[in-house]
Image (cartoon, rainbow, N blue to C red; front, top):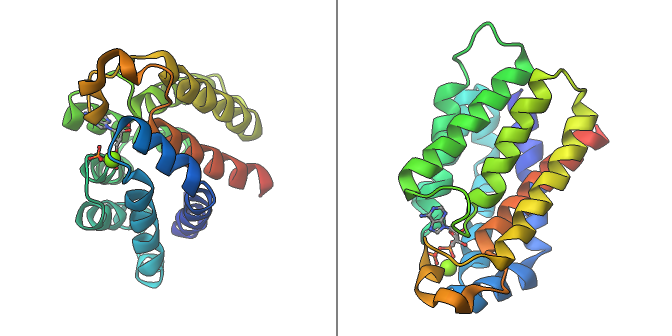
Length: 210
Ligand code: ADP
Ligand code: MG
């Protein structure tokens, strides 16, 4: 993975967030406090704002810088969680020297997801962003170990992310603001799960196009 790819991906992610303003805002208004779209937009814009600086860095240094920037710009629960994802991904990336490039990236993604789990003390089935991130991480590792080609993996991960996002609809939340709603949270997709699905889909589509 090269820094140029990270920057292309950041732009696709920004676009995906901006074009889904209504969806993200109404989901967080339904079971949160309505700021999730603003938080994600602020984060995405801040990353694009330091694009020139990021372009000079190695991939791991760029990911680390992205994490630090998100930490200082996104408020709310999602800021520190997404920040720890990128910072841990950056830390993991130079490890596993024996892995080929693709597997290295999968392991880095998995380390990022683990960091969110630790920081948020959450797991699968708690109606959070992890209901998208954990299945995607597991499926990606499985398909990469089975040596599937990148196009097949990307298409499959788009489906996995969508299934994870949709599955949050029927769940009761046990973490985050929606946890106080009990059964009233049922029937609503989790906003963080939706934004993660949008981001994963945007990056997978970018890879499929290239
Ligand atoms: P806030 O909840 O502080 O208003 P956001 O609205 O930006 O922050 O983000 C809310 C999202 O953060 C939720 O939809 C959920 O996906 C995610 N989230 C909240 N708490 C946790 C947690 N402990 N672990 C993982 N994800 C969480
Ligand atoms: Mg919120």
